[in-house]
Image 1: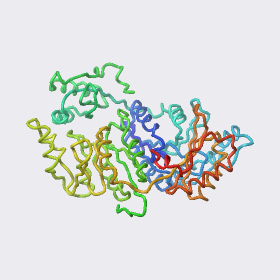
Image 2: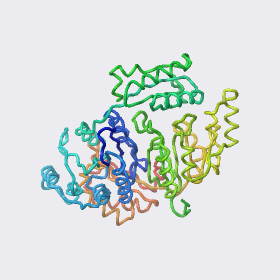
Image 3: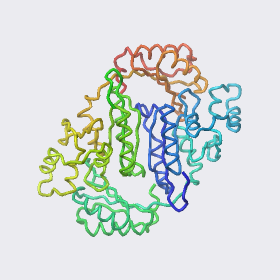
Length: 259
Length: 259
């Protein structure tokens, strides 16, 4: 998708791997990247986990690349037979798979005389790919159009994203939390009214464990003023005894970054 | 999807909620349910997180209900204005939303004179829904055709699924792990050959942290014999010094349940 520079960028994450669906491994990459994208002001709209099945990867990457500014894939880029992400992305965009000379040179320098055909698969990319260098790991980030192709190993996933993260900076979010002892149903009408009046997004998250509150309310917007006005309106209408804690106003620079 | 009783059941999980995409909350429900479905022998094929946007929920639930035996939704069933899962599922199947008298009676008994219109929204269901009682929580599981509608609060999600989990029992999986100090690229050809020869699924998961192994290999099938034969074939071809640990044979009943 072409990105309108006056709107916040959007994103989708496509996690690729049978191991995430079988319960053998728990996702760490989407959970981590969701927080990073938030900090950068990118609006994450979708997270999908698909198996190592080419048709599933092709359909999902194509649909997400059409709808969102950025698509991040995780996994399926190693040397083994179940690593089919590159082939699937090439097929999704109907371009051939080619061997990249820069990646091949890195592999040859690393593996030397042990280099084999499986290792060399890691130098394959969809034709038209760009490479982005930076960060502590020599291997560059592989990008095809608006699809950023990241490996599944969490340490490498994080290091590679951080190396290029500044290129994704968008409009900031502002958020304040209210921790309440209210019954969620009894304040539902108030939340809806305040959301509509101030043009903010309000979330409501009940707890049934032994936390010190029964529900956490989040108030968010792209500018700080409506968030503060909406929180003031809520506090003026809630029973004071039900308010356990409230984040300080958005004017406080500490909470402009919700990381 | 109609389930062929001689094939393993398949499943998708649809997580609904802006809070999972903004990084405010980390998913616990899909990660937990993936393991439970594995134990039950259900083949989980897709996990999707969508925002509180009706069109996104409608499209995803409809597509998954067509393709998979079971669809589990998580979230968006509370009393607040952002709880739109019921409306979206009704729209996906083109049925009206109706008020269920059993659910309404539970709400009236619980909230008594404090009951309001927001609470009563929790008694709304797509017309044609069935209720499934059981477990420690009085509120029944709401099911519409092959869509099981679960709440997002993790403690309730788990208790409700466990109350009805026996109805999802399918064919078991058998799995053995090998922890190796091999280079993943150097054994890639061997893994592919053994997978093809024995009709098993082989996964390969490299580590770059300070674990005692460089790669974990998983060998899986619906029957135990091909798993054991494939593992024996791998062990006969790997350098013994590279084999850190291996799971015992599938004949051992302890590992028939990979939970």
